[in-house]
Length: 143
Image 1 (cartoon, rainbow, N blue to C red):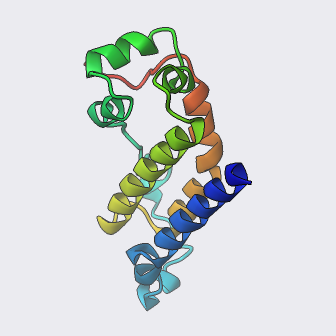
Image 2 (spheres, rainbow, N blue to C red):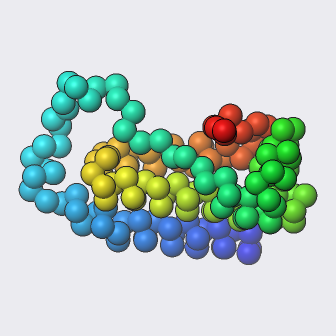
């Protein structure tokens, strides 16, 4: 029962926070509603948002140093690292989703993305985070 109840409550909590945030409120302005379907040709195909991991924060979540984290990521997925460190897979999932939401909300508040982008991004977030958790290497690391 707890395995179903806690994840369900957390998902409901995250969704309610997200919907009650400024994203929903700001999207209801007449200007946004009128310009709903306008696309600027200069922006077509342009990447407007990309979540970049905070590796220091992620390493802290696993209770590791950044170097230890990168060494473990050479041959282990985040799920495997979480198991080794005694962290529940759901906790890892919720952590990564929360970080994505924070970055997405920040981008929205800065005007980098619109409500339609946010909704589309959220539709695929669960699948993307689960894939990221299972991946064996972290290809986004940049020196």
